[in-house]
Length: 386
Ligand code: SF4
Image 1 (cartoon, rainbow, N blue to C red):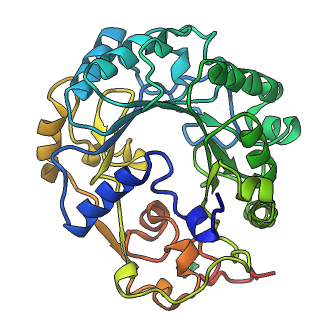
Image 2: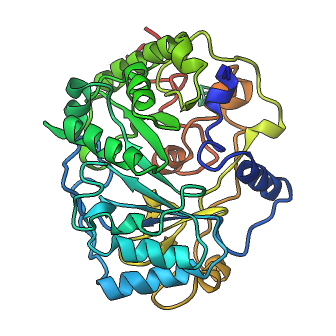
């Protein structure tokens, strides 16, 4: 199968396949808000055995729920018409009751994905109990594959982590678990997405999604020159990847999000956006929502500490009830309107899509503003195109 660059830029359907993507597009087209979110990311714990240098959770420690309350949240999610529950953290395989949570969700017919660093996917406190309810037809593990070799991987995730990661993914594959990989390029790992994709393919991953770090948490003070250098390295490695027939034409699906902090590679598609394209759908708070380690429903991960954004606790009410009361809190907009921004006349819109809506809100005060990281945004005394 040959993949085009255009396909590589389409990340939305990567995890669920075409039917799921079509459902989301239908909701967007009808401007419909589902009765519950379609995908729920449950950030079950902030605990982790690693101290990755790019980690957005960082050294934050939320008061986690007791096991009985986690079970209650799982049962509430299990009875809601959700297309997928993604369990993530922190590191969820550190939870001794992970098997119980997966079992409760699966008993309600919910497809489950487990996001893991794969350091001890079977030997941690959860053991392999979480695989007892595994259904390879619908579930998958999403592993954090942050480098293609020990030097780059350990540079980001800590000494000795590469070896354990490879052993962990092999253990999952030996049990026929579907494995997808997620790569975050940063100054810590050098941005070699080509090497990361080669390892993902060797390990039998079905897909690799690659994106560039958004420095928050432990990486919030990364110096800008290092970010720019890593972004350029990522782009160069992406070009090598796309020129590698074994990977670009192989069975492993690729989804690359290019950093807009530097100009994209010349090979990326370029054209001016249509007027309709400048209204970019925002899934957070519409089709996607998150549950915090404390059990609160929030529209987006970056808003989980904002008390004005909590839809309520799943310990107190079912998902549909919390969701229907969401107008009581400040809802995120359904679309990001870029018609009045620099993006309207930008030929790079085809690959960039306006950059990051979180960043626009966080740094410029509105989703409808330009992404302040865009290389086209003027910065006194800096030539970002060098
Ligand atoms: S102007 Fe908009 S579309 Fe163009 S590169 Fe910047 S953020 Fe991306």
